[in-house]
Image 1 (cartoon, rainbow, N blue to C red):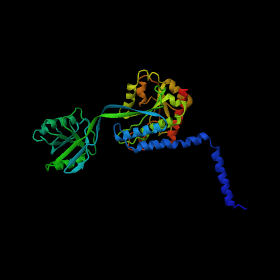
Image 2: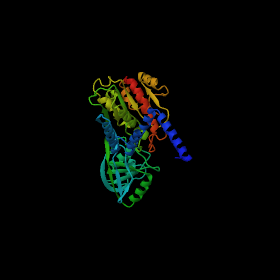
Image 3: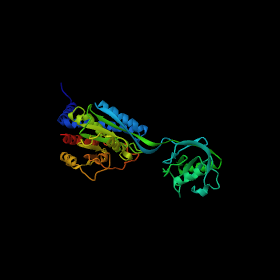
Image 4: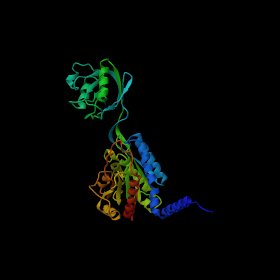
Length: 398
């Protein structure tokens, strides 16, 4: 049978493709196959929204990580802790039946109050209340000239049941009270303030429902093999993010990398030498890591070879590794091309303060850091970080 020339050309091209594929190193093929799960983990964490400690999004993230570690064959403990942190849990303001965007002043007490809306002249000094009756009413006061706490305190002394501060420039402002007030206090944008001022002239009644919390509940997710009560290494990354940021790079990237490492090590002897810890509360001052260190049993920290931390490892080409002399030397021996600069401040700092040797992996800051645009990372860089770290960790444990 005679084969047409185009068919011969196609067969020749097909044979070249097969030859190329079979010539690829198995390690390279395997590496490519392992990129996708890391990116899937990042996307899942991002899908929950801003993972601020104490929020539903953070709780969902902790549950997801717990579930994935269990799937990989690890036992999971959730270490609870709490710390002082004011949070607005959904404050509302209703005027003439319409909702107006508002938020509680940081430090305000919670409470639901209603009353006639009364505009206070000037800045809300004591003298500004002299010719205005606010007993049982809600005081509308402009921002500026004197502290928020002074305005609110003056209103309370005059008999007001609540205070609305109006920003004195376009946009929002998040003010803080320097002392605990006796009445609820909220703030609105300048544009909303103009609407409220007009309504105050018609004897309008408004309702405030201030919902706040003074303590933030945090959850560290600790994964280890059954019976491993004293690891040689803690491998960690924080999974919380800042307000209004989905935190893909900071730090779903680190969380995904250590989860990927746990999967790769699950059936190796190294799995019995490490604990994986997803820390909460890092963005509020390393709260999860500090709590872990504080709750550690006597002798636990001293027995560690080290703590290895991952933070922001999904953007920027250059992998940076810093650490204590012995661990850094081990890292440099495996990957001489990594760069180092001044030791960063992340969860490893809580361990370093207790004389635990540390190693810190990161790739530096980038334009989307702590912004709503922190939505994606490079799957290639995630995998490269994981592979490099696995080589270094195997060396440390050997």
